[in-house]
View 1 (cartoon, protein in one colour):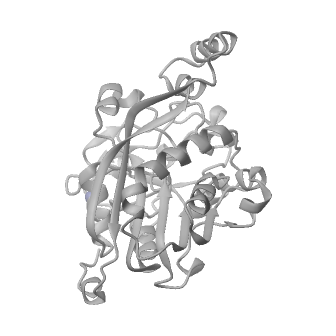
View 2: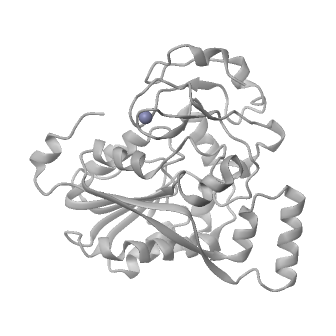
Length: 343
Ligand SMILES: [Zn+2]
């Protein structure tokens, strides 16, 4: 259903457009009132190309709606395609404080999957790690229970840290890792400018209220030659095109969905150079893959029970599920950063 506000031009920035149609289903207050926004990558205000209509069910909006690696419940914000930069983004979004609150209270039940993912990402980054100026200073944004921090320490990094807005994953972290994690949303003052060789942000950039600000601020923390690496869903990957609106990436947690073109634009707009991307294959236990299948809830639970009964839940399987690794480097010549286009 089109909103009465969607025919009006949308103002960029934090203008608040309360809309009772969009607020329906928000009665439990988890997300509060939704506001219109411009494309968070290029600023276009043309939100006429609807990718998915809003679908919310307040009865299902619980603490697991904002947990990582949950079972999908097929709720979503209204998603539109940007005609300028290829991003799909939620045109009406909760206030950043409401989102931070939802993540702050999100449940966590994915420690084993997080360890599998961290190993996959380290293997995908091997070539990039060799090109860093040094291994002193790394920050993982949205680090969860810090599984990737352990990989960084194993790879010889010093001054390693993570930031995570949800309390439960930090409580689940082993003590030596937990003390490296700041319980917070990402902020520009987390690290001094020019202090890090590597910033990573895995499966998080879709969730943040303003990906442009995050990438710009993370880029400023890099030393010359340092690398920012993102892992995100590729909405144009074959699996996501095949599943369409039934893909698990079409989810209420996602404020935006990237493609190779839109994520590259995001990185270049922050003044990064040597921008590149490639598909990565994920390795997870079968029980996790089953949970992601687009099955009705009862069917999914039955499949999980059968899998556990067969003793196959822990069996690992590598599948190309449409994840994208994208990276950019802070120029060695600071003049190039100064000339970077403003967003
Ligand atoms: Zn755009």
